[in-house]
Length: 165
Image (cartoon, rainbow, N blue to C red):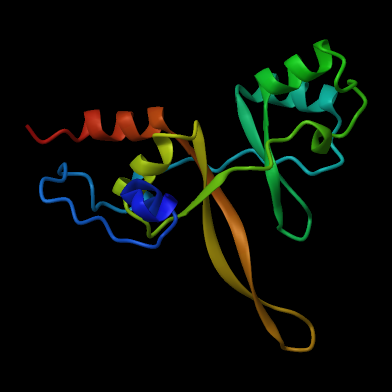
């Protein structure tokens, strides 16, 4: 049934949107949102420390990324507090115990239309950028870098600031 759902196909990159009456912002690239660099947590950060960091820095959520660059998931302040208070995690546990490991990624070159489709079902998307890296022996590999976290509020703020009436 997913193959019959155009929004799912667009969100997952299998179909370009063919809407006739797209909003003015639909084809603008995600990079135009001018997102600020995200706060990133390493997997060994404890739940207690994650709460402190998020509160101190004024963030609700942060990606958890291994030192290799692998995106492990997302930690949110509310989920962390809920998990700890319910006894499903302890303050001393690493954040990997309570992360959301199902999340959507979007590239800087993707359209705000694609982002809009993602945000219809997800609270956020992790903005990634692929970068070629070389190691000591000269071989190269592609590494995904977390460029930002985008929410529906970011998209709405962009549209309202630039609304072309």
